[in-house]
Structures are given as C-alpha cells and as structure tokens.
Length: 224
Image (tube, rainbow, N blue to C red; front, top):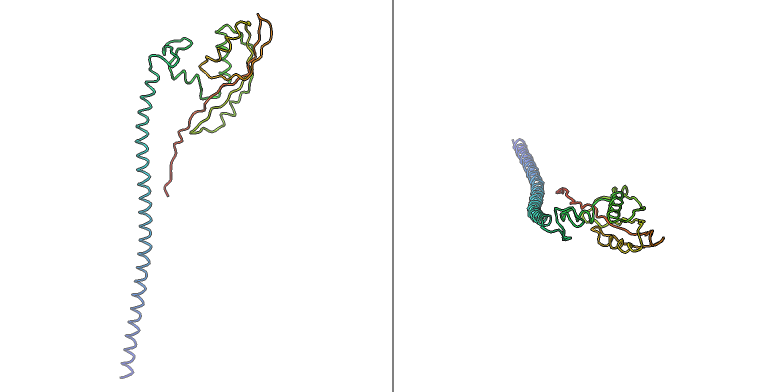
C-alpha cells in the first residue's frame, strides 16, 4: 500500500511538472509572438507614417505648383499681350521691330541648336539691307547637341561661325551696327576687310548662342 501511494504521488508530481513545462512553453511562445507582432506593427505604423508624410508633402507641393502656374500664366499673358513689345514695335506688325514679345525672345535665344536656320536668318537680314551674302562657315554641331541630356538648369551654348559679306566701303560701318542691333545676340571676335571701295569684302568671325530647353525634372519617390 505504501509503495502504491508513493507511485501515485510520483505520478502526480510528474504530471504537475509536465503541466508547468507546457505552461512555461506556451507563455514563452506567447511572449515571443507578442514581441514580433509588436515590432511588425510598430514598423508598419512607422512606414504608414512616412507614406502619409510623403503624401502630405506632395499635395502641398502640388498646390504650390498650381498657384505658381496661375501666376506664370497671368504674367505670360501680360508679357505677350502688351500693346508695345520690348523693342517698342507693334506686336501685330511685320516690321523689323514688330512681333509679340514671346516670338522676339525665341528669336533672340532659341532653344534648339539649328545651324542651317542661323545661316538662312543671317542671309535674309543681310540681303534685306542690300548687303551681299557671300558665304558662311562653321561647325554644324546639332547631332552632338541633341545627344546632350536636358537639365533643370540649362546653360547657354556657343554657336561660332565665320561670315563673308560684300558691300561698299561706306556701308561697312552699317554692317557692324546690323549685328549690334539684332534681336539675337552676336559677339564679334575678329573682323577683316579686303578689296576696293566699291567692292569690299568683310569677313566677320563671331558667335551667337542658344539656350537648351529646361527640364522640369518631374519624378517619383519610393517610400521605404
């Protein structure tokens, strides 16, 4: 009887120990699971916070852009629809100083490297003023310029050329004034004269400029 009672008591102790081990294991599992779950929730909450913050900044920037756009549109209309252009000419006329301000600005500093257009423009300007357009030389760098990536802060690019113009000796000073008074900026670097008073050849080495288009640099941002 004593042995049986001892065995029963031993069995109860082992059973209790097993229950304690199981309870401890369950408690440890719950604690570990809670820690990982809490960490995941905190991480997700932090991510959602960054997403919300990013969206709020994007919305604010968009609103600012819309306000700036409205201001730009208004300023552009006033600039283009001015009764007198920046040269004092008629915006709707066809004279030398006529044309709206937007066209004058594009003529002054085009956004494309167009060497043939430059040569044609110079030829027309000179012949309209009774000068003899003889030749123009330079490097047509249009293909190289087209490969250059656009930039949010573009810089002015030189367009060097050398032009030969025929005139009389008395008309030569007017030729220089023609370049100085042009809408498009020209920088004369070298000038040489040859020939006679009635048949004078003026060789002008100069450069003009163009300004590449500005890239608005609109992109996306990944929130991590």
